Amino acid sequence: MSWGAYSGVMIATGLKFIAGPITGFSLGLTWYETVLFTWLGAMATVTIIITAGKAILGLVAKYRSSKPKLFSKRIRYAVDIWQRFGIKGIAALTPLIFTPIGGSLLALSFKVPTARILFFMGISSLIWALIYVAGIYQLTFLRDMLVN
Image 1 (cartoon, rainbow, N blue to C red):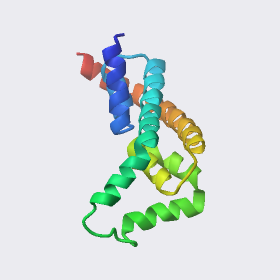
Image 2: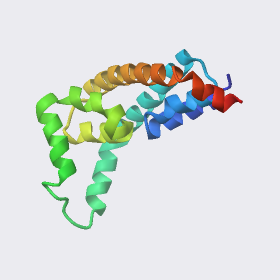
Image 3: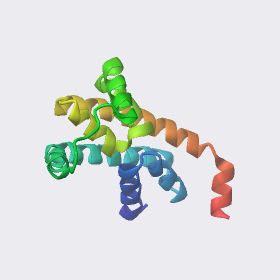
């Protein structure tokens, strides 16, 4: 396959995790190519966000017009996950709920060390990539509809 297809899977995964396996499936990539580039896309996004994350959080705080709510529903949910499961919970739920961008920023806001974020996000991304790709590639009737 071409590098355009691979980069398409990586970009789609970076924005919304499930979009990567769907993109790989629709482009006709093999399942292992889709798993690999889904994982690479998520980890590239996590690495970029962590690298630039402190600056992003500083800019958001600087240009915020009002103080953020301390007890919104979303903040309580994130704090509850953090208190129950820590970085492992955030990493496990990142592909499902938070997206790679949101999960990385959430982990940074709780001041988790960079190495721990990368380690747990890497494991979680690989596991969820395998689950999503296996599920999507089992939908052979969908592939037949897309190809014909």
